[in-house]
Amino acid sequence: MKKHSYEEIIKIIKKKKFKKIFTFGQSRGGTTFCSYILAKELGYLKYFVPEEISNHLNFKRLFIELLKNEKIYIHCHHNVFKRKQLNNNETIFIFIYRHHKEIINSFKKTKKRNSNFDFHKDIKNRVLKKIKNTTHSNGPKYLNDLWMDQKNYFKYSYTLDFNSLKKHPMFLKEKKRDQQFKSLKQISKNFFFHKDNFGLLKFKDENQGFKYLKLVILYLVKKLKNNLI
Image (cartoon, rainbow, N blue to C red):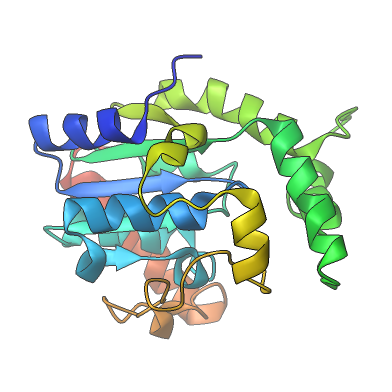
């Protein structure tokens, strides 16, 4: 797998003049820090849709927002099986890669922080249980391997090596992070925020009834209009 540093990804975005950015990642994969750094370095904080918002939205809504907005940066963990349907000719899709062993170690650290959230169980329920006749038990490894297959469905897809962020001035070494942060999100509150820049939270209940039907129709219209069907 070819992985790029965050500096290389920024150069690619600027050189190819991408105005629409979508990053994927895994829970406890360092993606909150990474996605905010990219948004900050690119001057996209006011166009940024963090996972706290995007994870509540139907993937069809995410696709629509990619097409309708001139500039937008979405980061999302969910819809892992359907995300390849987000492909369009104007967006760069980036997977933030962190080795599965490092992610599992991060899961263990959350237990030490007395977190009640079980990340292993979350991946099992949200991902592994949806695979028929699966023998997979290592969720983080499966999600990394899944990207290896899915990346070929996107016109513009890249893999960003999370470890390259260790060279960034805002990156703190583990011991210092543990001293400075007590919450799961190990990023400064002065920098970490989840502002609803595009007013998308009003769409979080589109998965049911008539609203879902309207969403599907709008999604198909956008697909047809952009010759993506």
